[in-house]
Length: 135
Image (cartoon, rainbow, N blue to C red):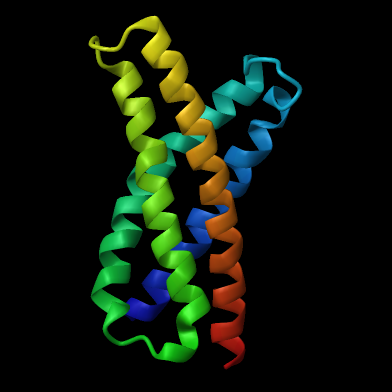
């Protein structure tokens, strides 16, 4: 049962990362996010803030049962946690009344880079899920 929950959370996490990455496409040309893409990004990020910690806890519970052949999945799991938490934390720090404008700009930049690293980790996670299912 835990395996199915972990896989479902992994697929939900990957889906959220796809939506979040797609909604940032408007900012790749140097423009800021606004309008519907920003609204979708904020909604999906709220789901990610809930999903990632739950996935991390469930994944850690099942970590001892994983075999070495699932190493691609393990790399994707740890990458998702390692880059997902800073992605969330940078936005959280922007919301606190302690950051100056320059600090907020720096945090937003770190948020973008951590988010892109999370996207790469999600790709590795998908490869690991597919290899795990076949194996």
